[in-house]
Image (cartoon, rainbow, N blue to C red):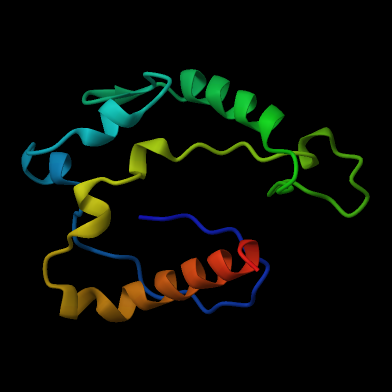
Amino acid sequence: YSTIVTNLDVKPDSPLEDEFCLYKKNKSCGICVKHCPSGALALDGYDRHRCYVVLRKNAELYTEFGSSYTNKSGDNPNSVSSEVCGKCVVNTPCTFFIENLDYNLKKLTIHVIFKYLLYSTFHQ
């Protein structure tokens, strides 16, 4: 799954019903846990506070992208940087392989369009 923050007017579709996480599906993976730089993600749980420490460090580094908390005045202290990581979902099998692709293609099309828009926006 991906998260995209936008101010575009997009009609939502129905949520995906299939389980694409291979660990949740049949315990055959766990790569996301190995990718987590903070150790916040584990096979038996998630420590959101530990993850947030990394997000705040990233926010200090990535100030040029704005924030999902940005307000019009820019006075909000949370509006100056991006609290992002996403290392856990990079290059994992569940982000590349989806069974019944024909069934899910319609649902995934919007994600591909957004990725193209984001790529073309930052690589002009």
